[in-house]
Image 1 (tube, rainbow, N blue to C red):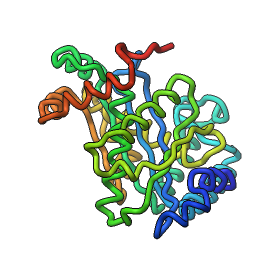
Image 2 (cartoon, helix red, strand yellow):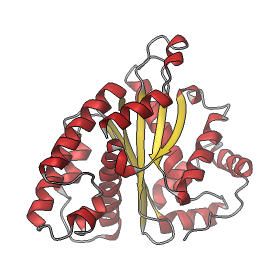
Image 3 (tube, rainbow, N blue to C red):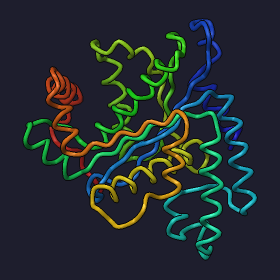
Image 4 (cartoon, rainbow, N blue to C red):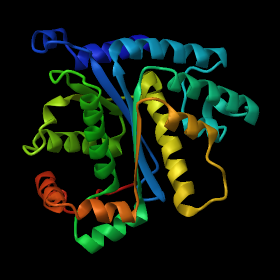
Amino acid sequence: MSTRVASISRLLHPPESQTRFLAVLDLTAYLDESGHPSSSQVFAIAGYVATSEEWDRFAARWIDVLRSYGVNEFHTVDCAHRRGAFEGWSKERRSVLYEDLVLLITTSDISGVATAVVVEDLKTVREEMRIRIDEYFLCLEHCFASFVNDAKERNIPDDEWIAYVLEDQPQFSGRAVNTYNLMKRRADWESRFRLGPIATAPKNKYVPLQAADVLAYETQLHMRRQIYGTQHPERHSFSLLAASNNYRGYYWDKGFMEEFFSRPNVIEQFKEESKRSGRRRRPKTD
């Protein structure tokens, strides 16, 4: 799997790009989602960005951890519910593996972004303000912009772009590319040049997508508990991820959305993007 990270980096950051940019860091962000707009109370997209060199180191360490437990890949939901490779595992064994992976994430030189939206709140705001925007578009656009803003604040050279990799899923892949293209065409966004190539890949073969899966799962679960008041303390795993360096978490509830969409020109921007996308209705879901 480590070699796969290297191969996709070469695809997204070809050698000829080094002749166009002064300092090529090969920054790649991997993103995954948690929940589903049609069936979940909260929908989230989250992921991490790092250089190709750091991703190679991270992937090698991740694989070593998994192999020490006798598994070849990691899916957070499967681990949480004792499915797939984790069928028959004790709660203790699953917890220890999960803690080891979270520790690896928090001690690596990767930057995280997480965005979650309360599905019912977005529905209400959408009707009140008469805007056409769905959960996936809102979260993904915000993640794209957040990674770019993070690069700017960390003083990464202006000539550096960020490539993006998302899990290859039929119900979302097309929407991801469409959202990306809309942002690339935004003449009012001065940092649009930082959006590098975009690709989709299978999660079971790309370790960084498995790390993104952990953050997306933890973000969705944390916000669901916060909004709907389940009587549980904050998960230790989420606390560690949120407290780590270079982490940004954004939570879209009704109050924040009303404030955000009331800002000058924001409504007009989203209406224009809706026209460009040609999506007059929410996408069909399975």
